[in-house]
Length: 242
Image 1 (tube, one colour):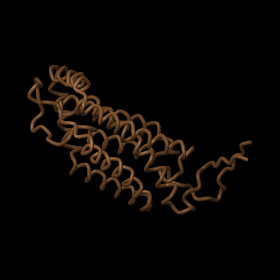
Image 2 (cartoon, rainbow, N blue to C red):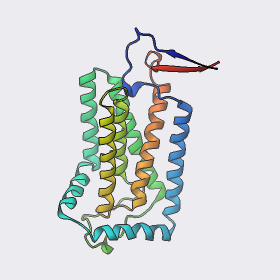
Image 3 (cartoon, rainbow, N blue to C red):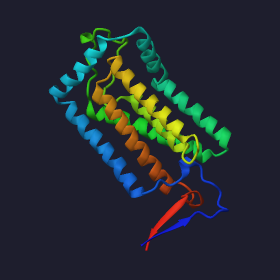
Image 4 (cartoon, rainbow, N blue to C red):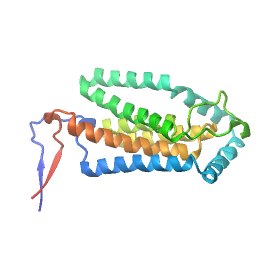
């Protein structure tokens, strides 16, 4: 039989990002499964010519259909989410969160979710060793062409991690649906820009989306479960099996 106990009225509201996610075991399992699947497919793609050929066919088709306005947008995204700027963006956002909420732990959790997801994807890049698309074969190659490994897309991982962190931050707020829509649009736009410029294969950006999702859910669940003080671990609703 399942009983439901609501949090006490006098309890201090817990900021959305610091709430325990429901069904924590399932969240951890999903996060770990996503990371393992992305890593496994990366190792396969890096050594499978057929998959790379199909992937590159999309890059070449897109390169033949560039439009000036879209190219400007894609180049701007490339600049905005470069590693140095990504760090600056994260630091500024965390500073704003702490300044507005006066909650250092909330800002720290935001930074942890974004940083672990993004940095871990760079470790995966080194393990997979998938080379970038051949820019010489593109109609409109982006130069200077990146020289690091391709899988997964770091820009996509960072943008998706940032988007998910904002979604977690807005949990329980009336404006969360707006945040969700903007987060999805933003993540997909960054993912599209990497294929548009020909610096990543389509599978690289799909992997980036999945890696960020799995890593963010896993990091948030484990950090709230084991790093938060017990007074902040109280969820809005606690289900107990009797």
